[in-house]
Image (cartoon, rainbow, N blue to C red):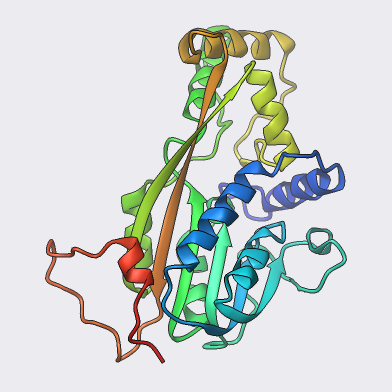
Length: 294
């Protein structure tokens, strides 16, 4: 059960499923995280400075921390995870999900990969990250956004409506890029920038997609999920709808993953002043490549 009945995500169940996925590691199941870590490395390469200390927040694997260190943009990097099992025996800090256990203005760089969508309070998390950054410190992150698993969502809803006349929540409600940009501003970040990268993965069947999601610990952890046992008939019908609506000519089905990349700086007097509304012409690469830093 979720600790708070008003929370969208059952955090305890989320951690349990991530822990199980780590314990039963399936080779290659972390391909989305590995891709995100590669993208992180590319984005860090455009940053025109080096930071003394960095933190990788609730990424479950070491990929983000390793990308930071390999980039040469930080002298040291600490991992913060929701469970000791995610640290794999390595060094790091175990913290309650949704809580950033860092002193104010204590780090120069914070990164987060594919975890913010699992937060019940994304605005609060962003505020904590901004407070942990030193003046002119950088936050760089990626989260699953609107459009992610749209095919699976539609197929499950259609099958349930057809068989039972109703529908229960089965896929996370993902934020869109404009909402995330507004959240960065609301959290007090300077020079916030967002962009979207869409990845399409092809599978033999819907069941192969679900197998990957289970291996990632990314199955349904919504607090409002149905507690009733799900029938084989339901999954068979959902798979048939999926294949009918979202298959390619060769019979394989598509699964969309939409990643919202975001960056923002902790405010500092040395930063350029915001332009008037509607006049911004700053790309993510330009925002990250600032040279006028301490």
